[in-house]
Figure 1 (cartoon, helix red, strand yellow):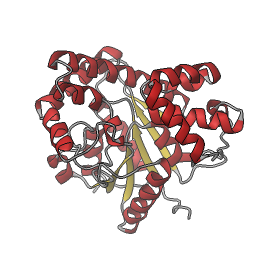
Figure 2 (cartoon, rainbow, N blue to C red; figure 1 turned 90 degrees about the vertical axis):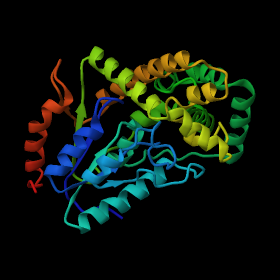
Figure 3 (cartoon, helix red, strand yellow; figure 1 turned 120 degrees about the vertical axis):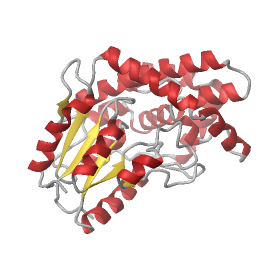
Length: 316
C-alpha cells in the first residue's frame, strides 16, 4: 500500500557524525517525529553499543523503531520497510512529519526506492553456504566473493557473514553478480516524496568524534551491557551482536582481548566503516550535502530549517 504523498526528510551520514543530536534539535523546532533508519538500533537491550537515543533525547523528541524488537528476533530489510511504513502513517495521522535518521545505506535505499527486483532465494543453498562459512570462516568465503563479484566484496566487510552468504546465494542462483543486479535496480519514482540530506565532516574531525564516542560508550558500561545479554543466554553469534564493535567487546568480556586493544580495534573498525558509508552515500541521488569543509555538523542547522520550511513543515 503506497504511503501518502507528503514530503519526508532523510538525515544520514557516517557513524559518529552527530545525526541524532541534530535530529533532536530539528524535532524541537518543527512538528517532526524521528524514525530510526539503523539496522541495529531496532533491538532493545543494546542501547549503548548501538548508540540509541538517550533518555534525555527521548524526552525531547518522539522516536520510532528504537529498541522495538527483542535481541533474539530475526530482522530483515522487508520487515524494516513494514515497520517504517506503519510508523510513517501513524505520524502523518497525527498531523506531523517523518524524519528518517540513520546511516544504514541499504535500508535507506530500500526506504526511498523499494527493494530491487531480484528476489532469488533457495533455503537449501543458503543452509549449505551458512555451513561453509561456519566451517571455513567468513574471510574464506569473502575471498571467494571477491573473485566472482569484486564490487560487492569491496562494499561488504570480510566479517559480514549475512551479506557474504546472500551475495554468494544470488550469484549461484542467477549466474550474475549481486552488484550488477543492484546497478540495474529500476527506480522510476521514489516510494514517497522526500529529500535526502547527508552530513559530512573533514576526515580528522570525524576520526576524533569516533574516538570520543567510543570512549563515551565504553565509559557508559558497554562491557556490562554485553555481560548482561550473555548472562541471559544470548549466543555470541546472535544477529544483534553483528552491530559494530560488539565482537570486540565480547572478546574482551570473555577474557580474550585486553581493554586497550579492544578500544583500538573498535575505533579502527568504526573509522573503516565510516569510510565505506561515504562511498555508499556518493552513489545516492538526489542528496543534499551538508557541512562545508571544516564546519561542525550543527552549524548547518539554519540550512535545514530553510529546507524543512520548503517541505511544508512550519516551526512549532
